[in-house]
Amino acid sequence: MKAIVEQLKSTAAATKATDLRAAFAADPERFSRFTASLDDLLMDYSKTAVNDEILALLVKLAEEGGVEKKREEMFSGKAINFTENRAVLHTALRNRSNTPVLVDGKDVMPEVNAVLAAMGKFADGIRSGALKGATGKKITDVVNIGIGGSDLGPVMATLALAPFHDGPRAHFVSNIDGAHIADTLKLVQPETTLFIIASKTFTTVETMTNAQTARNFIAKALGEAAVQHHFAAVSTALDKVAAFGIESERVFGFWDWVGGRYSIWSAIGLPLMIAIGPENFGKFLDGAHAVDNHFRKAPVAENLPILLGLIGFYHRNVLGYPTRAILPYDQRLSRFPAYLQQLDMESNGKGVTIDGTPVEGNSGPVVWGEPGTNGQHAFYQLIHQGTSIIPAEFMIAANAFEPELRHQHQLLMANVLAQSEALMKGRTFEEAKKQLTDKGMDDKKADFIAPHRVFTGNRPSITFVYDKLTPYALGRLIALYEHRVFVEGVLFRINSFDQWGVELGKELATGLLPVIEGKESAAGHDSSTQGLVAALAKLAK
Image (cartoon, rainbow, N blue to C red; front, side):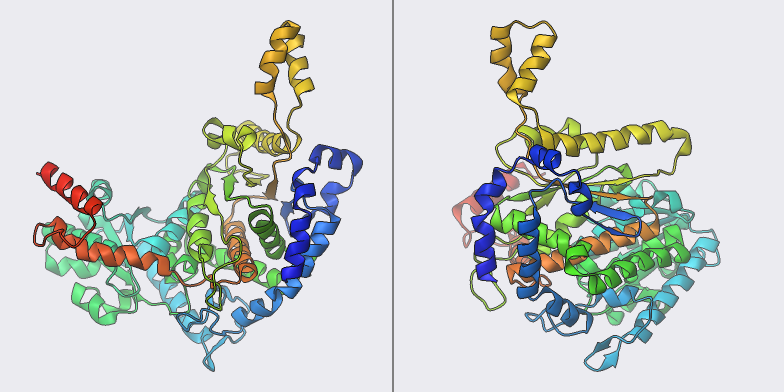
């Protein structure tokens, strides 16, 4: 594998100098040769610097890097998360074929199906009004309280699938900042609100603090006895859930082999299921399962997740591009960049390899983005003319849900295609100067102004095109990126499924709380922390 990486690095200088405009002019078939598809989902990577030589090397890298071997280890239930001795089987949650999936010799599918059925029964009860609040009124609002994977996935998917909402209104609270839950409680009525507490251990500080505030909200308005009618939990800590006042039939579990950032397919997806209904939730799982099958069966050179991962690795660890912009041209995917930010950065933001040695080169990139066209009027300036190369990943549906606004969707499509073309083609000095002189500017002034209107081009982008953002399409898109993260993690030679970087700050926060409360001295902390504690104490009222 090292030899192939070195071969790829030897191409880096030539790749950076590649004239993509010339490449397209010289090869009318470039688009068809550097695209891949799964049904209506098309991935165009022809506007990256990948050529036949590089693609062949990347395919060889996947083979020698053990991507296919590791892929089968994941699907078979091997404990590939070795630092926590856990299998990684979020794919089992959408295993629509229902073929056995073994963990320690036991088929997990009967439990997966049982939880899914229990979720469906509960969701139907809330949606139909069969399960009511304490005063007999139908539930009109659902508030999910969770953080990290217990929040980012549900809120992203619920926003994305707004056209399919025919259940109660959905709200999400994550931040320990009291403003988050305070603002949310102003939008709902105690008699008609269901709270879902999403915490596997039922000990997550942010979640349980907000849960207690929500409990007080219900108990104060409706009495202690009402709590059982207005709460459900996604947790495995049945004793703690019972002590909180939630009955066992309103508790939905999941397993250690489901990581938080991969848990939208599990009971963590309950608020989504209540919003769009069990049938549409099933289609969401179907889409992900289709990508799982494609990931396992398609040849490397035609395999969307593997290709996406290989190009990502090439951009990050060969060409050294430090960030990746996620740019969905769909307002309903406004939280998709944040969702991928956690998925990618928490998975591959590691500095140590699987054998405990420092990572050679780079690991995962900084992932960020906003929906188009908003981003065009905010940060695209840097993507087009800045000194850092930022690979961009665009997403666009051919069809929207507002036929009466078809022209606006056509404008949206025109914009995303224009951005990918502009990043690729750029604008030369001669073209910029001609634009100015054609408008009547004199030659001397045009020579002065034109450099500011030059775009170097050769800025890589990948574009995804699909029919429409349905539950099936969203499930497919999420699973594609999950497997991309897996592929890159294998090539970085890291464990993509632990997250020890989350722990240190949490530990220190626990020790700092009594200092903030004035119960302990800050003397044991560094001078900066002591100074900040003093500044906050002075301002606190």
